[in-house]
Image 1 (cartoon, rainbow, N blue to C red):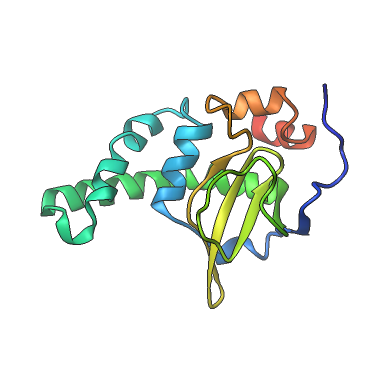
Image 2: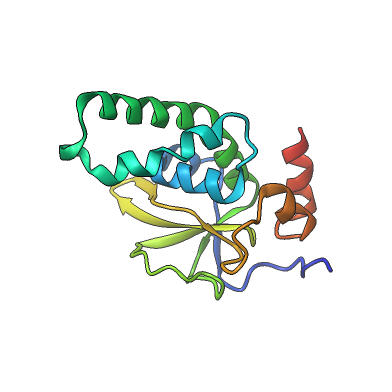
Length: 166
């Protein structure tokens, strides 16, 4: 059944194209976005799976080759995944007034950026930049929701589905 087409109950303000340059997507947020929503993106899963192990080591505990590999993974994600994510935010991103009821994480945040009913990004604000720190899926109890499933469940609006097909 299609969801109500009205605004989300926690809607604060739309993200506009002027906001996009201020958004900094962390490697962790990209990795979570791929693992939770876009595992079928060609090549992304091969990068997203080994990233957490390298990130968990911490910068002072990685060997030079491990740091180099992590940097290559981050560069690949920024080049191939980040544009897709930012397009989603351009189409249906908004600042949320509070965590949606489906959001279960206790990640501290200065605010939240939500993409429809699909996902939520806790944000950290530093001067003029907005950092997306991680990505949580819109259905906390359903870890296999992908972009395509979200479209069929009307977690995103139809006009966003048309944009995703272009």
